[in-house]
Length: 608
Image: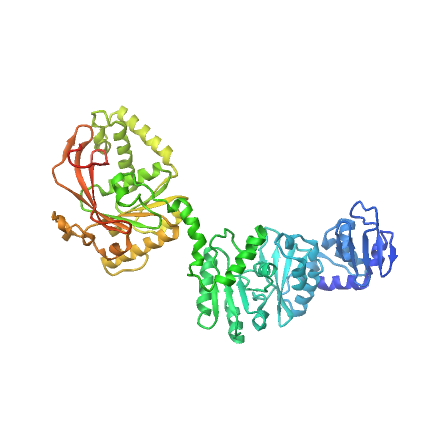
């Protein structure tokens, strides 16, 4: 016999009054019996038995159940042992072999499924799991949610045409598969009968049953659950068979990448035939609607009512208003100083989140040095800097950073330290110099150990992973023309255009500033200042239209200025050729000291 058949036989043959009467002194009162409850310190008879329902309940401690439940609690045994003990009273025996055979049936029949669901529904009160997930007794009763005491699983029945056709088992033991379906049966969507209910005009579609039950608990509207975001095929088959009229569908999948992707897939499959919208998760830091419900029921109610009102208008102003208020109050709205006063003046304060800035550089003007110095300025302000180098290995980048730091430490000492890079390459530095250099390096690492992130390569793939784990990042790219886009390209111009598209996605997704170096078209390597405009950028189409600001870096003359403490210096002019937030044509003059990898602002050539 199946376990459910044995349980049914126990209840038919063992009267609950007779059984409990063996252990408690019962007093008849009308159609029920009363007794002192054995499960708590009861002074007045609060333990009641209803013979007509074969059910007991204590109004003092709240314990309730059938004859099996009483046997479990009174004899302090588990469900399996209680069933075995009671079965022996009526001449049935259960051994482990039989239990094993019961679990190895190839496919459960519909009768077995119904019997199992009916049995488990009687024990729903024996678990706190439903209450913990915010599911009310009324919903438990409506959907015949149950608890399999023997296997420690909750049972979620699936009904079609008013009849139980399947169920989902949610295992509560962590070492078991979380969700299971009856043996030989596949996943079936939950609550598909809603599609035939003309009164149900708004229909939410969720991944899991608990999410669907949450929506009903929150706003009183039954919802459909696919039992996994990947289980769209059967739902769509039933939907297209019924072809319901006058319904609006609201897809509310889990708040993760897989859920967002699956929601878009289902939306695309439905949008040509049905009114359908994707619910937006902005501002809700929960993995699904049930977790949201467990943390704040009032907020979930407001969230769902808002979806009913706004989901079909995702680009309406009202959808952005609250986010905008949060944005202008946040640090991301504030311009970030570049550390160069003249540059900040041209940019109205500095770099702004969600914008792309490009510096076009001719050869030998210190473009990488300038980018590294910008990074250092932002690190000092507490920002996290991600440097993608498509040209230099990280060892070369670090050497330049540490040599600059070493040079600045020795700024008032006329020593060969300002050419220390050469000494490192030729291994001619003295032991004292090396000790000083190591001290400077260790100090820098200590300050920025988890603030500076250096990537080598010509792809933006890893950038997403790094940015996902940072709080206040800024992305730097050196340089655009060496990067390879994710999509295939057929020309240099197309390659740069695709890279620009990827950078746009990054700056918008993470709402951060992105700073990039671009090479210049060789046709623009002229000394004629009249040609210094946006057209000087190689493959300038995307750069011209996609950047917030663009600057051309140009050496003013080839004759260096020498300083005993800083080595040779060159005058570098930054001409602003594109500026979304200000005027163009502004010139910024800096001195590039190649000996110590340093840029300094100057007002004119006579400053130094």
